Image 1 (cartoon, rainbow, N blue to C red):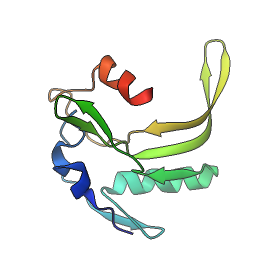
Image 2 (tube, rainbow, N blue to C red):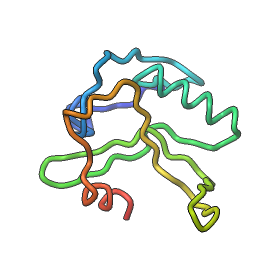
Image 3 (cartoon, helix red, strand yellow):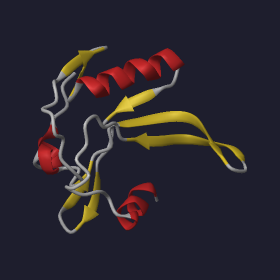
Image 4 (tube, one colour):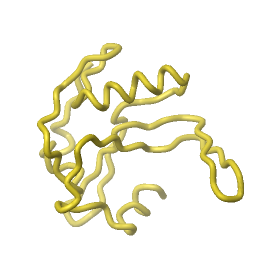
Length: 116
């Protein structure tokens, strides 16, 4: 299955948060074309752990022309915090390989819009 990225605007600008320093290699896994081998490997990792996931299921409009498309939505996730484990029905996950921090990051305000 190939994802139609045209509805998300210009793919390279969709995340609005940075720039990969290496050209990604589109990779097919379980009938899904992942935009990078790193994302496909992460899907294999999630499958090995028995974690249910969706690849790029939903984009978010952050306003001011910024849009964000998380790589994965994973389900029934437990994370450890200082006060113990917390379980979430789902969580969005961004997978990155080589990352150039000089280009930019999501602000806390942008992230809060996504996670509401």
